[in-house]
Amino acid sequence: MEATLEAVTRQTRGKNEARRQRVAGRIPAVVYGGGDSVAITVDPKQLYRLLHSEAGMNTLISLQLDGTTTPVIVKHYLLQPVTHQLLHADFYRVNMSKKVQVKVQVRVHGEPRGVKQQGGVLDFLHREVDVESLPGDIPEHIDIDVSNLMIGDGVAVRDVSEGKAWVALNPPEQLLVHVVAPRVVVEDTPAVVAEPEVAKKGKPETK
Image (tube, rainbow, N blue to C red):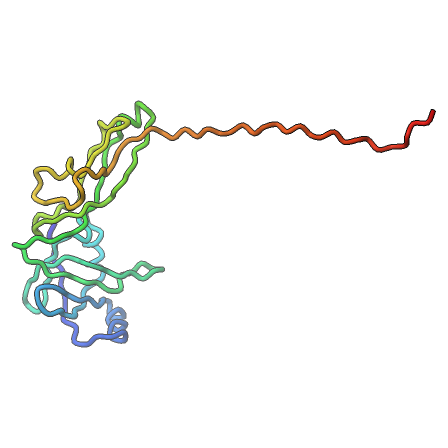
């Protein structure tokens, strides 16, 4: 996915300037990579929509700044811990002819036969895959159809990366999801402890 984001050069830095920008409805950001870093401001609402799109942080962004357009991706962003509002973002310039390394989310769909028919449990082991790719070939996410998995079956990195325009950096044999048998919890039956007899107290019998 490719999107457009407008930016404005920021002449000054510091906490006071950052606070002033946020009051004005913008957030401070920095562009790194491929040359000198540039301090900018962006519209947090536009950036928020991009971060919550299908591709998320892997969205290829055409950053429009000072009459030029630069391809970038989001490397890091900061949220206010209570309100979750965007406070700051870091962008990384990319060369469309050079590969980059990113993390791509794994998504599963379908209900495994091993769950429906055998009572198994789907175990999601890894929710991200490290990917090396040209910027234009970064996948939005990695889809896995788990419908035919039975107990003991799984999907490894090699199963989702063969024949793709990108390369997975994780070990090929690394399992992403698998179906396992449910755990059987054996409860120990507590032993019955006989209560000790208590001698009855009283007056001794008189004859």
